Amino acid sequence: MRQTSFAAMQCSLARSLEMVGDWWSPLILRDLALGPRRFDELAVDLGISRNLLATRLEGLAVDGIVTRLRYLDHPPRYRYQLTQAGVDLVPVLMALTAWGDRWATPDDGPPIRYRHRTCGHVFTPTVCCSSCAEAVSSESVHVLPGPGGRPGPGTMLTGEFIGARLMNGDEVDTKR
Amino acid sequence: MRQTSFAAMQCSLARSLEMVGDWWSPLILRDLALGPRRFDELAVDLGISRNLLATRLEGLAVDGIVTRLRYLDHPPRYRYQLTQAGVDLVPVLMALTAWGDRWATPDDGPPIRYRHRTCGHVFTPTVCCSSCAEAVSSESVHVLPGPGGRPGPGTMLTGEFIGARLMNGDEVDTKR
DNA sequence: CTACTCAGTTGATCTATTGAACTCACATTG
DNA sequence: CAATGTGAGTTCAATAGATCAACTGAGTAG
Image 1 (cartoon, rainbow over the protein chains, first blue to last red):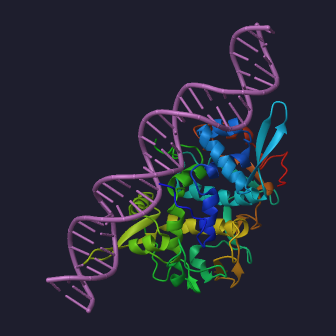
Image 2 (tube, chains in turn blue, cyan, purple, brown):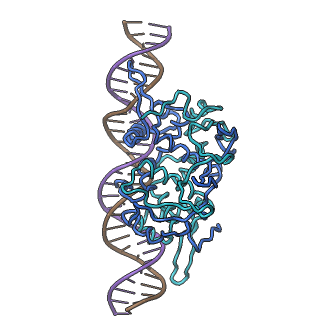
């Protein structure tokens, strides 16, 4: 089979997915952000098979998202830690979690909540405009071609649709 | 084998991943947000195999993220469209794309850029606090247990680490 | 009448995921 | 000091998913 690699795609989403888009990786990163740091903790918490966990951690380390730290020499004991790239990814995972709180219907309300230290409030992670700090929706965004944009594997046609175009189309109706 | 289902996990991230966390799904949603809407357009643009595309689209439709619309009766022609859940997910994908722009090192700069209609600026999608609109980082967030939180598959230990705790630990160093 | 498009199915092949058992070094306990 | 336990994986058989490529079938264009 060989799962198709997204690495060659001229698309930052595809490249992100190549690094953290597989089954388990985001949950491993969630755990590293929330507390579990050691191999066995991760394995027990997630219920992931140990060989897969080993493979994933190695991949994440190669991609510079986690580091493997030896915190004890005798016996050798390791701890996995998020790098800056990993830390930067946490808010994105929080946003996806917030989406799940809304659309994946948890049985008894959200399993965890976030409080913002600087303002003190319990909040919902929201994707905002870096310029005006307003929440963005797909309707309020124009997509523009960037310097790295060109047709290629994974983006054969998208370019034709882009160009000062309203994201999510002109003839859109979002009825369910 | 059966790939482990995340659906039963008491974690909104896991439930989100159950719906959109598999190989290709996020790219399919990207395409639906950017332009391609028809089966063949998606297949050609992504280079995904046609049977997988059919399976994914059906799954996304079952989960209420896309709808299949017949826009022509003779011959029968269909178009796939994001539902409100799908539209709500787009900003999250944008945030992940922005992460990729930063950490997945595109060769020639970002393939696409976003402009915010309401303020007119080209911007970086940023995850912010819904209360104070400041950008959140994992260091500025406390994690609190929510009503739906309890140990279970996929979250056996995380609960022990949570409780008015600083996300990403107390003894964290984020050196690379 | 033939070729082409859209929207998928079907089937053979191959690989990633799973679950469980195994290794190996060190530590702890009775 | 023998027996058990813990951390951090590795090895292995079985199987569900992914891939590629060819096929179907309705309709339309030339």
